[in-house]
Length: 389
View 1 (cartoon, one colour):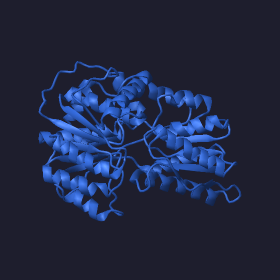
View 2 (tube, one colour):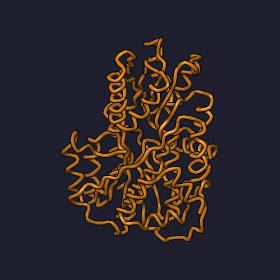
View 3 (tube, helix red, strand yellow):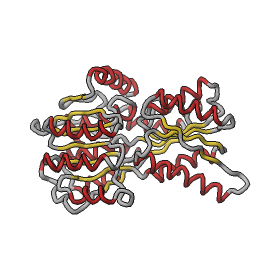
View 4 (cartoon, helix red, strand yellow):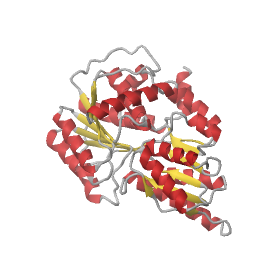
Protein backbone atom coordinates (compact mmCIF):
# COMPACT_ATOMS: atom_id res chain seq x y z
CA UNK A 1 0.00 0.00 0.00
CA UNK A 2 2.90 2.35 0.68
CA UNK A 3 3.98 1.76 -2.91
CA UNK A 4 0.39 2.28 -4.02
CA UNK A 5 0.18 5.62 -2.21
CA UNK A 6 3.46 6.77 -3.72
CA UNK A 7 2.35 5.69 -7.21
CA UNK A 8 -0.98 7.46 -6.81
CA UNK A 9 0.83 10.62 -5.67
CA UNK A 10 3.33 10.47 -8.53
CA UNK A 11 0.72 9.92 -11.24
CA UNK A 12 -1.64 12.54 -9.86
CA UNK A 13 1.21 15.02 -9.50
CA UNK A 14 2.04 14.68 -13.19
CA UNK A 15 -1.60 15.25 -14.07
CA UNK A 16 -1.79 18.26 -11.76
CA UNK A 17 1.14 19.87 -13.60
CA UNK A 18 -0.97 19.88 -16.74
CA UNK A 19 -4.20 21.11 -15.18
CA UNK A 20 -5.39 22.33 -11.82
CA UNK A 21 -8.53 20.25 -12.18
CA UNK A 22 -8.16 16.55 -11.45
CA UNK A 23 -11.28 14.74 -12.55
CA UNK A 24 -12.10 11.07 -12.49
CA UNK A 25 -15.09 8.80 -12.82
CA UNK A 26 -15.97 5.93 -10.55
CA UNK A 27 -12.39 4.72 -10.33
CA UNK A 28 -11.37 1.63 -8.42
CA UNK A 29 -8.57 1.18 -5.91
CA UNK A 30 -6.21 -1.77 -5.92
CA UNK A 31 -6.01 -1.28 -2.14
CA UNK A 32 -9.64 -2.26 -1.65
CA UNK A 33 -10.40 -4.89 0.94
CA UNK A 34 -12.71 -6.55 -1.56
CA UNK A 35 -16.24 -7.79 -1.08
CA UNK A 36 -18.89 -8.91 -3.52
CA UNK A 37 -19.35 -5.28 -4.55
CA UNK A 38 -22.78 -5.52 -6.19
CA UNK A 39 -23.00 -2.54 -8.54
CA UNK A 40 -25.30 0.36 -7.70
CA UNK A 41 -26.54 2.54 -10.54
CA UNK A 42 -26.02 6.23 -9.70
CA UNK A 43 -24.31 7.37 -12.88
CA UNK A 44 -26.28 10.64 -12.93
CA UNK A 45 -24.89 11.69 -9.54
CA UNK A 46 -21.69 13.73 -9.50
CA UNK A 47 -19.99 14.83 -6.27
CA UNK A 48 -17.21 17.42 -6.29
CA UNK A 49 -14.21 17.44 -3.98
CA UNK A 50 -12.47 20.74 -3.20
CA UNK A 51 -9.19 19.74 -1.56
CA UNK A 52 -5.83 21.41 -0.89
CA UNK A 53 -4.09 18.60 -2.81
CA UNK A 54 -5.13 15.21 -4.10
CA UNK A 55 -1.49 14.24 -4.62
CA UNK A 56 0.37 14.79 -1.33
CA UNK A 57 0.55 12.19 1.43
CA UNK A 58 -2.76 12.82 3.17
CA UNK A 59 -4.59 14.08 0.08
CA UNK A 60 -3.78 10.95 -1.92
CA UNK A 61 -5.07 8.78 0.94
CA UNK A 62 -8.30 10.79 1.01
CA UNK A 63 -8.61 10.34 -2.75
CA UNK A 64 -8.19 6.57 -2.45
CA UNK A 65 -11.06 6.15 0.01
CA UNK A 66 -13.36 8.62 -1.79
CA UNK A 67 -12.69 6.94 -5.14
CA UNK A 68 -13.49 3.56 -3.59
CA UNK A 69 -16.75 4.91 -2.16
CA UNK A 70 -17.64 6.45 -5.53
CA UNK A 71 -16.99 3.11 -7.24
CA UNK A 72 -19.03 1.14 -4.73
CA UNK A 73 -21.97 3.58 -5.03
CA UNK A 74 -21.70 4.02 -8.80
CA UNK A 75 -21.34 7.82 -8.67
CA UNK A 76 -19.02 10.22 -10.46
CA UNK A 77 -16.46 12.21 -8.49
CA UNK A 78 -14.52 15.27 -9.62
CA UNK A 79 -11.58 16.95 -7.85
CA UNK A 80 -10.22 20.48 -7.75
CA UNK A 81 -6.86 21.04 -6.04
CA UNK A 82 -6.90 24.55 -4.54
CA UNK A 83 -3.73 24.65 -2.42
CA UNK A 84 -5.54 26.38 0.46
CA UNK A 85 -5.25 29.66 -1.46
CA UNK A 86 -8.40 31.59 -0.54
CA UNK A 87 -9.36 32.79 -4.01
CA UNK A 88 -8.77 29.29 -5.39
CA UNK A 89 -10.87 27.75 -2.61
CA UNK A 90 -13.88 29.92 -3.43
CA UNK A 91 -13.33 29.51 -7.19
CA UNK A 92 -13.21 25.72 -6.78
CA UNK A 93 -16.78 25.66 -5.47
CA UNK A 94 -17.96 27.78 -8.40
CA UNK A 95 -16.06 25.49 -10.79
CA UNK A 96 -17.57 22.31 -9.37
CA UNK A 97 -21.08 23.75 -9.32
CA UNK A 98 -20.69 24.84 -12.96
CA UNK A 99 -19.47 21.33 -13.82
CA UNK A 100 -22.83 19.90 -12.76
CA UNK A 101 -21.98 18.54 -9.33
CA UNK A 102 -25.11 18.10 -7.20
CA UNK A 103 -23.00 18.01 -4.05
CA UNK A 104 -19.56 19.18 -2.92
CA UNK A 105 -17.28 18.23 -0.04
CA UNK A 106 -14.70 20.87 0.84
CA UNK A 107 -11.57 21.24 2.92
CA UNK A 108 -11.47 25.02 3.11
CA UNK A 109 -8.63 27.09 4.54
CA UNK A 110 -10.46 29.71 6.62
CA UNK A 111 -14.01 30.27 7.81
CA UNK A 112 -14.31 33.40 5.66
CA UNK A 113 -14.16 31.31 2.47
CA UNK A 114 -17.32 29.53 3.54
CA UNK A 115 -19.42 32.68 3.05
CA UNK A 116 -18.87 32.49 -0.71
CA UNK A 117 -19.01 28.68 -0.77
CA UNK A 118 -22.38 28.59 0.98
CA UNK A 119 -23.83 31.33 -1.28
CA UNK A 120 -22.64 29.54 -4.42
CA UNK A 121 -24.23 26.28 -3.26
CA UNK A 122 -27.46 27.99 -2.24
CA UNK A 123 -27.69 29.76 -5.61
CA UNK A 124 -27.05 26.54 -7.54
CA UNK A 125 -29.01 24.20 -5.24
CA UNK A 126 -25.87 22.16 -4.54
CA UNK A 127 -25.35 20.33 -1.24
CA UNK A 128 -22.20 21.20 0.70
CA UNK A 129 -20.29 19.54 3.55
CA UNK A 130 -16.93 20.34 5.13
CA UNK A 131 -14.24 17.78 5.89
CA UNK A 132 -11.29 18.31 8.28
CA UNK A 133 -12.98 21.63 9.09
CA UNK A 134 -15.81 23.20 11.07
CA UNK A 135 -17.01 26.81 11.14
CA UNK A 136 -16.36 28.41 14.51
CA UNK A 137 -19.61 29.29 16.24
CA UNK A 138 -17.81 31.80 18.47
CA UNK A 139 -15.25 33.38 16.13
CA UNK A 140 -17.35 33.35 12.94
CA UNK A 141 -20.88 33.77 14.25
CA UNK A 142 -22.29 35.30 11.04
CA UNK A 143 -20.82 32.56 8.83
CA UNK A 144 -21.98 29.87 11.26
CA UNK A 145 -25.50 31.36 11.05
CA UNK A 146 -25.35 31.38 7.23
CA UNK A 147 -24.47 27.68 7.29
CA UNK A 148 -27.21 26.94 9.82
CA UNK A 149 -29.80 28.86 7.78
CA UNK A 150 -28.82 27.20 4.50
CA UNK A 151 -31.06 24.42 3.12
CA UNK A 152 -28.00 23.03 1.31
CA UNK A 153 -25.27 23.04 3.99
CA UNK A 154 -25.28 19.42 5.14
CA UNK A 155 -22.72 19.68 7.96
CA UNK A 156 -19.08 19.49 8.99
CA UNK A 157 -16.81 16.54 9.78
CA UNK A 158 -13.77 17.49 11.82
CA UNK A 159 -11.28 16.48 14.51
CA UNK A 160 -10.77 17.88 18.02
CA UNK A 161 -7.72 19.94 17.14
CA UNK A 162 -6.96 21.52 20.55
CA UNK A 163 -6.96 18.04 22.08
CA UNK A 164 -4.77 16.79 19.23
CA UNK A 165 -2.26 19.58 19.78
CA UNK A 166 -2.08 19.03 23.51
CA UNK A 167 -1.57 15.25 23.14
CA UNK A 168 1.24 15.73 20.62
CA UNK A 169 3.14 18.33 22.66
CA UNK A 170 2.82 16.05 25.69
CA UNK A 171 4.60 13.27 23.76
CA UNK A 172 7.57 15.64 23.42
CA UNK A 173 7.45 16.90 26.99
CA UNK A 174 7.36 13.37 28.36
CA UNK A 175 10.41 12.50 26.23
CA UNK A 176 12.31 15.32 27.98
CA UNK A 177 12.13 17.96 25.23
CA UNK A 178 11.96 21.57 26.44
CA UNK A 179 12.84 23.84 23.50
CA UNK A 180 10.15 23.22 20.88
CA UNK A 181 10.07 24.83 17.45
CA UNK A 182 6.69 25.26 15.76
CA UNK A 183 5.90 25.16 12.04
CA UNK A 184 2.45 26.23 10.81
CA UNK A 185 1.12 26.13 7.26
CA UNK A 186 -1.29 29.01 6.56
CA UNK A 187 -2.02 31.91 8.91
CA UNK A 188 -5.68 32.02 9.84
CA UNK A 189 -6.43 28.40 8.91
CA UNK A 190 -9.02 27.23 11.43
CA UNK A 191 -7.50 23.77 11.90
CA UNK A 192 -4.01 25.18 12.37
CA UNK A 193 -5.31 27.66 14.97
CA UNK A 194 -6.99 24.83 16.87
CA UNK A 195 -3.81 22.75 16.97
CA UNK A 196 -1.74 25.78 18.01
CA UNK A 197 -4.16 26.39 20.87
CA UNK A 198 -3.54 22.82 22.03
CA UNK A 199 0.25 23.04 21.78
CA UNK A 200 0.24 26.22 23.87
CA UNK A 201 -2.17 24.76 26.41
CA UNK A 202 0.02 21.67 26.85
CA UNK A 203 3.16 23.73 27.43
CA UNK A 204 1.38 26.13 29.78
CA UNK A 205 -0.01 23.24 31.82
CA UNK A 206 3.43 21.61 32.00
CA UNK A 207 5.10 24.84 33.13
CA UNK A 208 2.47 25.40 35.81
CA UNK A 209 3.00 21.89 37.17
CA UNK A 210 6.83 21.96 36.80
CA UNK A 211 8.07 25.38 37.94
CA UNK A 212 11.69 24.16 38.03
CA UNK A 213 11.56 22.41 34.66
CA UNK A 214 10.19 24.94 32.20
CA UNK A 215 9.49 24.31 28.52
CA UNK A 216 9.15 26.86 25.75
CA UNK A 217 7.32 26.87 22.42
CA UNK A 218 8.57 29.11 19.62
CA UNK A 219 6.43 31.45 17.59
CA UNK A 220 5.42 29.66 14.39
CA UNK A 221 7.36 29.68 11.16
CA UNK A 222 4.96 29.30 8.23
CA UNK A 223 5.66 26.69 5.56
CA UNK A 224 2.63 26.71 3.30
CA UNK A 225 1.78 23.20 2.11
CA UNK A 226 5.06 22.31 0.39
CA UNK A 227 8.09 20.23 1.32
CA UNK A 228 10.38 23.15 0.46
CA UNK A 229 8.43 25.39 2.83
CA UNK A 230 8.76 22.85 5.63
CA UNK A 231 12.49 22.55 5.02
CA UNK A 232 13.08 26.31 5.10
CA UNK A 233 10.95 26.72 8.23
CA UNK A 234 12.89 23.99 10.06
CA UNK A 235 16.22 25.52 9.00
CA UNK A 236 15.13 28.94 10.28
CA UNK A 237 14.08 27.51 13.65
CA UNK A 238 17.31 25.52 14.07
CA UNK A 239 19.35 28.59 13.17
CA UNK A 240 17.45 30.81 15.60
CA UNK A 241 17.87 28.41 18.53
CA UNK A 242 20.88 26.04 18.59
CA UNK A 243 19.41 24.42 21.74
CA UNK A 244 16.27 23.35 19.88
CA UNK A 245 15.43 19.77 20.86
CA UNK A 246 12.03 19.28 19.23
CA UNK A 247 9.98 20.33 16.21
CA UNK A 248 6.26 20.30 15.53
CA UNK A 249 5.46 20.67 11.83
CA UNK A 250 1.76 21.19 12.57
CA UNK A 251 0.39 19.72 9.35
CA UNK A 252 -0.48 20.83 5.85
CA UNK A 253 -0.97 17.43 4.25
CA UNK A 254 2.35 15.74 5.02
CA UNK A 255 4.69 17.53 2.61
CA UNK A 256 5.86 20.24 5.09
CA UNK A 257 6.66 17.45 7.55
CA UNK A 258 8.77 15.62 4.98
CA UNK A 259 10.67 18.83 4.25
CA UNK A 260 11.28 19.45 7.95
CA UNK A 261 12.55 15.90 8.49
CA UNK A 262 14.92 16.30 5.53
CA UNK A 263 16.29 19.56 6.96
CA UNK A 264 16.94 17.95 10.35
CA UNK A 265 18.67 15.01 8.63
CA UNK A 266 20.87 17.36 6.57
CA UNK A 267 21.85 19.16 9.76
CA UNK A 268 22.88 15.84 11.33
CA UNK A 269 20.44 16.35 14.21
CA UNK A 270 18.10 13.37 13.82
CA UNK A 271 19.09 12.02 17.23
CA UNK A 272 19.01 15.48 18.85
CA UNK A 273 15.66 16.83 17.65
CA UNK A 274 12.43 14.92 18.26
CA UNK A 275 9.65 15.52 15.73
CA UNK A 276 5.91 15.03 16.15
CA UNK A 277 3.22 15.98 13.67
CA UNK A 278 -0.21 15.24 12.26
CA UNK A 279 -0.88 13.34 8.98
CA UNK A 280 0.67 9.85 8.86
CA UNK A 281 3.55 9.44 6.44
CA UNK A 282 3.65 6.28 4.30
CA UNK A 283 6.99 5.31 5.90
CA UNK A 284 5.99 6.27 9.44
CA UNK A 285 6.76 2.84 10.90
CA UNK A 286 10.35 3.05 9.66
CA UNK A 287 10.72 6.63 10.90
CA UNK A 288 9.47 5.75 14.37
CA UNK A 289 12.00 2.92 14.45
CA UNK A 290 14.99 5.02 13.30
CA UNK A 291 14.12 8.01 15.47
CA UNK A 292 13.38 10.57 12.75
CA UNK A 293 9.81 10.73 14.11
CA UNK A 294 8.92 10.66 17.82
CA UNK A 295 5.17 10.40 17.42
CA UNK A 296 2.27 11.33 15.20
CA UNK A 297 -1.48 11.72 15.06
CA UNK A 298 -3.32 10.74 11.93
CA UNK A 299 -5.16 7.86 10.35
CA UNK A 300 -8.03 10.27 9.80
CA UNK A 301 -8.24 10.00 6.01
CA UNK A 302 -11.73 8.49 6.35
CA UNK A 303 -13.00 11.87 7.60
CA UNK A 304 -13.86 13.02 4.04
CA UNK A 305 -15.55 9.64 3.45
CA UNK A 306 -18.13 10.59 6.09
CA UNK A 307 -18.67 14.00 4.48
CA UNK A 308 -18.98 12.26 1.10
CA UNK A 309 -21.65 9.91 2.49
CA UNK A 310 -23.55 12.85 3.99
CA UNK A 311 -23.66 14.68 0.66
CA UNK A 312 -24.54 11.48 -1.22
CA UNK A 313 -27.54 10.91 1.03
CA UNK A 314 -28.64 14.52 0.69
CA UNK A 315 -28.60 14.18 -3.11
CA UNK A 316 -30.54 10.90 -2.88
CA UNK A 317 -33.13 12.59 -0.64
CA UNK A 318 -32.34 10.32 2.30
CA UNK A 319 -31.12 13.20 4.49
CA UNK A 320 -33.36 16.28 4.64
CA UNK A 321 -34.21 19.26 6.82
CA UNK A 322 -30.81 20.93 6.98
CA UNK A 323 -32.15 24.45 7.24
CA UNK A 324 -32.14 25.70 10.82
CA UNK A 325 -29.53 23.32 12.22
CA UNK A 326 -25.79 22.72 12.05
CA UNK A 327 -24.77 19.06 11.79
CA UNK A 328 -21.46 18.67 13.63
CA UNK A 329 -19.65 15.32 13.25
CA UNK A 330 -16.54 14.81 15.42
CA UNK A 331 -13.96 12.40 14.01
CA UNK A 332 -11.24 10.61 16.04
CA UNK A 333 -7.51 10.78 15.53
CA UNK A 334 -5.24 7.76 15.99
CA UNK A 335 -1.99 8.34 17.90
CA UNK A 336 1.26 6.40 17.56
CA UNK A 337 4.60 6.92 19.30
CA UNK A 338 6.46 3.69 18.47
CA UNK A 339 7.04 1.33 15.58
CA UNK A 340 4.92 -1.30 17.37
CA UNK A 341 2.03 1.16 17.64
CA UNK A 342 2.16 1.63 13.89
CA UNK A 343 2.15 -2.05 12.91
CA UNK A 344 -1.53 -2.64 13.68
CA UNK A 345 -2.52 0.59 11.92
CA UNK A 346 -0.49 -0.44 8.88
CA UNK A 347 -2.26 -3.79 8.69
CA UNK A 348 -5.80 -2.41 8.61
CA UNK A 349 -5.42 1.10 7.17
CA UNK A 350 -2.37 0.95 4.88
CA UNK A 351 -2.04 -2.55 3.47
CA UNK A 352 -5.77 -2.43 2.78
CA UNK A 353 -8.54 0.13 3.08
CA UNK A 354 -10.47 -0.13 6.37
CA UNK A 355 -13.79 -0.76 4.56
CA UNK A 356 -14.79 -3.23 1.86
CA UNK A 357 -17.04 -2.17 -1.01
CA UNK A 358 -19.96 -3.98 0.63
CA UNK A 359 -19.32 -2.16 3.92
CA UNK A 360 -19.23 1.18 2.09
CA UNK A 361 -22.61 0.39 0.53
CA UNK A 362 -24.02 -0.52 3.95
CA UNK A 363 -22.57 2.69 5.41
CA UNK A 364 -24.40 4.68 2.73
CA UNK A 365 -27.72 3.28 4.03
CA UNK A 366 -27.24 4.58 7.58
CA UNK A 367 -29.38 7.43 8.84
CA UNK A 368 -27.52 10.53 9.96
CA UNK A 369 -27.17 9.44 13.59
CA UNK A 370 -25.97 6.03 12.45
CA UNK A 371 -23.36 7.60 10.19
CA UNK A 372 -22.24 9.88 13.01
CA UNK A 373 -21.85 6.86 15.28
CA UNK A 374 -19.88 5.02 12.59
CA UNK A 375 -17.52 7.99 12.36
CA UNK A 376 -17.03 8.12 16.12
CA UNK A 377 -15.99 4.46 16.41
CA UNK A 378 -13.46 4.34 13.58
CA UNK A 379 -10.33 2.85 15.14
CA UNK A 380 -7.72 0.16 14.66
CA UNK A 381 -9.78 -2.11 16.91
CA UNK A 382 -12.94 -1.47 14.90
CA UNK A 383 -11.22 -2.19 11.59
CA UNK A 384 -9.63 -5.36 13.01
CA UNK A 385 -12.96 -6.65 14.33
CA UNK A 386 -14.67 -6.15 10.96
CA UNK A 387 -11.76 -7.73 9.08
CA UNK A 388 -12.01 -10.79 11.32
CA UNK A 389 -15.64 -11.51 10.46
